[in-house]
Length: 356
Image 1 (cartoon, one colour):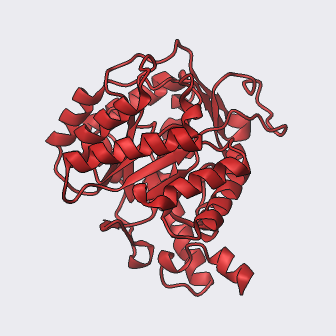
Image 2 (cartoon, helix red, strand yellow; image 1 turned 90 degrees about the vertical axis):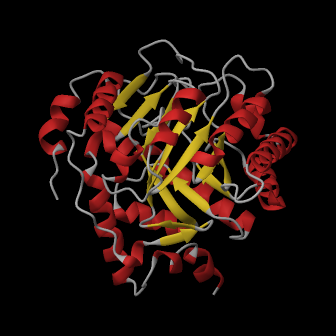
């Protein structure tokens, strides 16, 4: 396993974070970044929503906003890649600087503001790629759209034929008013309209529809979301997005920057939310665990707490893409150590053991 990031990482981190990210995407797009050796033992495979995932480790939305390098990232060892967030119309996002490394904390703060090239550009790229590997599309709303559901309807209708799953993202802290859509009444309307648009676009074989939620919700809010999720209009939940909270343990002088915090400080709170959501949904719909994963042991904790799949992004800033293969090796070692023959056996096992 060649870890090019051990050589390039220190130089890349001398650059502004957003400049470094743009350079990384351009290098991936050019084919100059070598792929990782294939390592997908059968024990790590998962089948969900009629899709085959070679392993449960996914790339979270935010890295490839414009669907420029989904296949290149699959080649880095991910079991699936989520592009976006994408809005109907292109938008520049918030003023720069808007992304900040917190190396002392293994974290990042961003206030990007759904900067992306819009549906036309993203749909064209997805349509041009060969359909291999699992690719999800994360949908957002334009900042100035008053009828939020209309933007999600447009995104669902346009990208449904081109994606393996779709995500309603109402949990970014960087679009004014977006998180208010997580209230039960607003959410029922939003999900209902998006589902209707999805069904109209693909009456047969529509891709699964997921919802990505914020880690800053109260327990009562989680109960409302669980009720909406299990009512039949959603096929899964992604737990969770970045947080506006600032744990007292943060050491970086950048800790006070406005925006969403991701990375290691989010692990405990996002895992507690994941665990609670699994209890509230009684394991009836798949959950995707996100927040602070940088090792196989952390992925294992999420899966035991109820995640069928997991995602990461911030850890790549500090570990590079060779980290993905290391996580898979570590995860398989943990499965073997504990006597499991597949990831599927472990999903939510902490809950079953607590009851048994």
